[in-house]
Length: 298
Image (cartoon, rainbow, N blue to C red; front, side):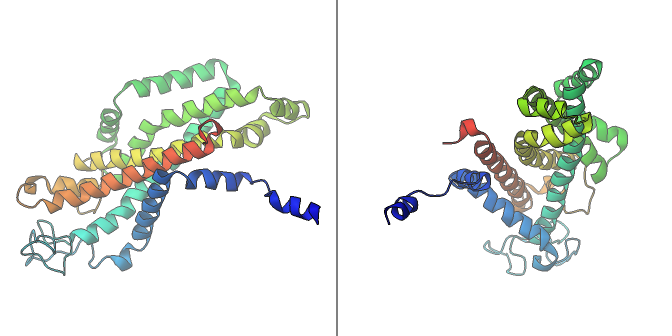
């Protein structure tokens, strides 16, 4: 009886997953960011069914119609319409799909190339490491948006080229993080034991070292999505990213520049969408960093 009572007073130790979730759940900012990211993701996935109109559908009877709560507005267009009668709410919903696609594609390209170069630079060392890291340093010395503009100007305007340009701009962060983590892990006992047991270089890099470098890469990937969305929106605003009539948020801002004074809603709502999305991913990234780093856990 006494042993059972003593056993009941001691809770089972937390698994790493439970410890991570508890640390993340205690961070209110991270949970708020996660909720917003989930909401935006659901809107993006369900946009064809949630949006009241097709994003390219025009109506010449409602040019620059104000939001429903403003005088002259209509419930048929809750957030108003743009200069050629397209529903703002529908375009924002479909624009969420493009923005998330851009963020995920850019991070996927950057993280794959960054891990490959960082692993080789940290493991092989020597001349290859010097060449890779000096190239990354050169990329980092250039203003990110200016470099992206130059790359798009060379490749040509378009959504795919804009994603490639932003991926190149984000690449150095993943290379540096991976290389630093590989150097830190390479001298540890478990790597030495695997090497002495006959493990080859490929197994050491991919099986032994890489999984232990995942935490900082996950955090950087979360923050990188917000950077990619913001840079792609900037390129779209300059006419170098997604091209009209694509409902990308930066392109929507570019189309609405001349109507800032006459129709505040055509600029405000795309801007708010970019702001909330970028802020949500930044909050989530900060929370992931705190939850995955033992030094930052409370």
